[in-house]
Image 1 (cartoon, rainbow, N blue to C red):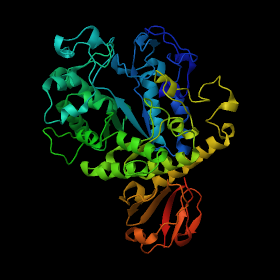
Image 2: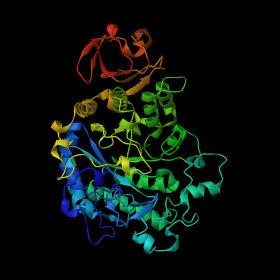
Image 3: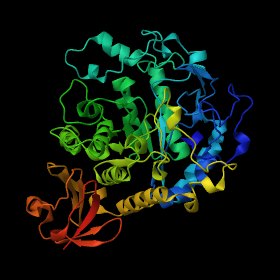
Image 4: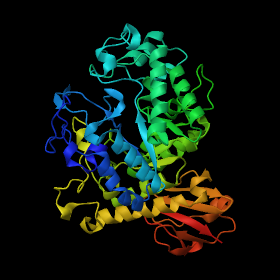
Length: 494
């Protein structure tokens, strides 16, 4: 979240000709001054962490006044209130700053994911203020919100009215809903996306509010982008309630009246399953069994490797708080995040154990990264190793080792996945390629366990040892025991 990560240029904190001229770090609803130069200044930090790609919340101009949300006067610091597609917000540094960041990232071998919003615009966008024609905006639902039930798209018994409310409803009154059935609207969004990909060297698109867009339009814009840029990555964001719903919006193996062509989705169900696996006692469908059951439903996806997996984001409680600030549970979820199928995404600050719950607002989980502002106390600057406490440094080092190991691991980047039914809280899965086998083993139970290796012979046959990916320690499999709460990523050895 650019506004909350780092401020590299204090001169652009306030732009006088914008409608919102506030910048106040003491107000969690105000802009705080983070910008693209600030992100660029921290590329070395991100590179050390093992980051390969930056996903920024939208950088487009959000020239909106403060708006009323849940009884608060809120700024568009998050970037989701577009007022001009072709301008990068000047408080982030403008178009030139975005190009500079992209070039600097690419020079380091890193990529850029841009956040796309096709569904709506800010109420001060020129399209909303002076529509080219009456049908550029959806009006059938007035300013009523969508009902958020994605089931209407694949429910064989759904009413058309329910479907239209989902597609035409306005998220909130200050976010007019674009009518993508209008060919001029669709063409405008497609042309902009192609232009931005070329102009800024964008490597991929994360499409916001995917399930609220016209389905045929989504397929068309994906097709157009990939025709122009075959190596582009495209994945959608939809907070859904079942693996079936998630699979519906991407390429899948389900017979439905409409077939989506997105490469992948943000995998909320995998996120919830990992959190449950770390928090809950294993039962018939709880704890690590829930993770097992969720992965078993990958049969729905054409390619589950294209999904983006994560532990938290800017709309959710921070995972360190959710797990009760328990380091053993954090180790579990880190191990799963960096070794399961799909593309792992880390929310800024998780690596140094930033924490909080949402309290009547998302702003409480979007706090400034400590040390990202010139006036910040150096002793609390978590970009610096010497300022982190033992737990924060331990978390940073743990992620760095996993992420950097993953870069060159054929098993984790290209290999297949095999999992075993959890027993008494003991959960094992393997990622394997012709060149490498990785074992991820977790004891989520209450007793010390010595795995019965005969049960896993299909994958460990021919191996007698394993190297801990984090510590480098080599152990004999036959003498390996796990205490409750322990979790390891191991490379199997002959």
